[in-house]
Image 1 (cartoon, helix red, strand yellow):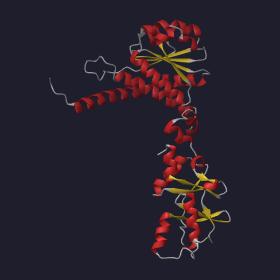
Image 2 (tube, one colour):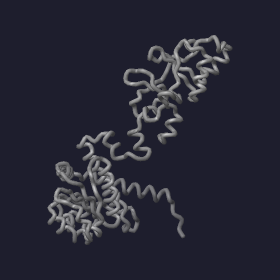
Image 3 (cartoon, rainbow, N blue to C red):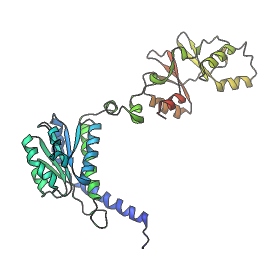
Image 4 (cartoon, one colour):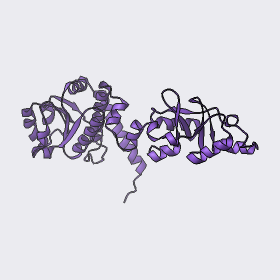
Length: 322
């Protein structure tokens, strides 16, 4: 058996597919803009249709559309022939994926789709195919060759269809002025959802768990407060204003200076350079602040800049953000 150079093979595939995408971008014309405008005016869903490899692409694009502000639903063409077409209404836009443009299951569906009265669009290879000529707007995903050396397995063509579907989703996203807050609404679960929705106030130590003392408190009593709350830090607050903090690190330095903990006021040994964060801020911002300043704890302030809590890296880790 002839030994294959795997790296050269991979580079060849990537080169062929990248050239296919370059050609696809160069060939985009007004039809793509028309497609976007029609969909934006539509009051219904975007239904994606496909079979085989094109069906997998259609399913992925439907998911991307839905998560970026364009409600979408994927239907397998075979299932549509056996009842699933009932989910399509005249207000919907149907987007067909078929590289050959001659998928029999889809061709058989087109008369029924036209009876429904919905808009029908297609991404196909040949622009003279049956499906291309039967739809309102057709955009070609034709490629010069597949990356498969046998020119059989869909590779460059599926990459082109996938990229064009992504391009459509992003063009619609930008037109709808879809924001990170909008994105969060459709991604409530997992690390991504938490990054977009979890706030500092949701995970900070507050109320009776918030360790704070006045500037005149003796160091010995400050240590009791640190020990009781178990957070390794105590905020120093004077008339609702944050004046400093005292941490485990400050304690080590104080002990090294041989100060009397029963006579020394906390204001004399506290750290005055305190990093803070608003309780309404996203917890992900707290991570950025901690990493930037190489620290592991922040004092939390409310809208009036009154200290109300403590947020530790440990809290962020427990929340699943880190």
